[in-house]
Length: 136
Picture (tube, rainbow, N blue to C red):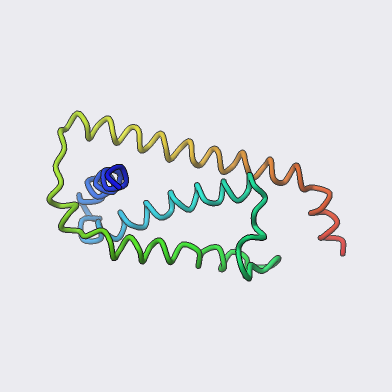
């Protein structure tokens, strides 16, 4: 949990400036949930585990709506567990903050690249199935 709080602090520190200052806490929680979601989708794609998601529509915009609904429980959980006051009271050295920020940016980029790679891999491995489903 210490690593997650550190990452949340880095997000909060980033958003707690300028015109995003009034929504810094919600943006922090939303950004971290989005990053978790990227990793979750990568795992689902690599394991071809979309069948494990209950009641996931197989076609149309309902599929995307269902995937967005998967983000709601972690969002609510973090909103209940993490307090804005705790993030405001955290302090770390500027050196650690700069290093942590670069690592967090690198982690986000790597997560996004892995998601794209796993989506291409999933599409390549399931191409005959996808084409057959479209034709029928």
